[in-house]
Length: 224
Ligand code: DX5
Ligand code: ZN
Image (tube, rainbow, N blue to C red):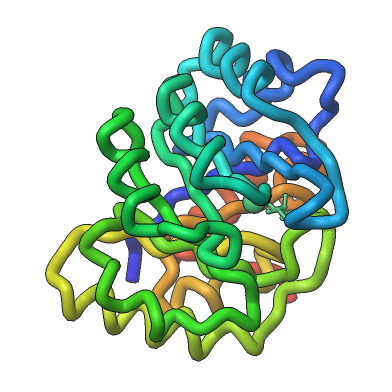
């Protein structure tokens, strides 16, 4: 497994200087934007107006992770704002197939996220509606939490199901990804890696991104 895309999360960035913070991650494949409403998760971050500005001031593709209720209503607006991908939580959508189709028809890649205790099995038949599945590797809501190894079997099962479709569906992991944990997630089948504190907590975020990527592609041996 050498496929590897790194999406830094700006949840760990300086919210007063987001334009400059995006320049610090120029080696990233996309920027992960965590939208939280203090209802689906016990935290509040940013919404559509800021996503629209990020889209205007940066060339990095936006990977928008919606941790909000009523996502069937609010999700398509983020696709219309120009996000490359829009991720909704399965637990928050009443009509995930319709929402995925709405996102695609608004020009975004459609992605669905699962909290750590939510199984993939009820959603296997809708994989062809999706461009990416996000397996949360922490409980959503906050950066800086520890990677949950209990999610590894679900990552493996999801990778196997994706291979079964024959479709190029990405498999993203989010939460607790660092140079110490990224290889476990990669070996289980993940190919898109969100990292907040591991990137923005580093002195040189662009170099931290390269380090994470190199751990997966095998050109770097992590210091134990
Ligand atoms: C958590 C967010 C993550 C968060 C990850 O709910 O979805 O994107 O920023 O932060 P780290 O990498 O620090 O666990
Ligand atoms: Zn996220």
